Length: 106
Image (cartoon, rainbow, N blue to C red):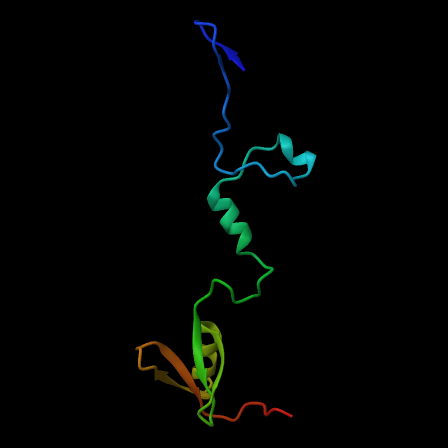
């Protein structure tokens, strides 16, 4: 706290972007607060799966049933290898249609 000229006390406020966490280890207390950008970058790395945050491409099986979406890189490889063909949905989103049979359920 600071003493002002008129004798009133003023409290010093924390102006960091990150609110203090009560569960933080004491070793982190001396480190500067992280920016919002740094926190978002850390939150998108791992934990939720490898395809989180990436654009996905929908996949239609050779029998016409929808399959799990894939990444754009894998879709390019399937198109280049002749295992899939381009297709578009009624909402004008890009996808691939498999030309070869995929694994069957047991």
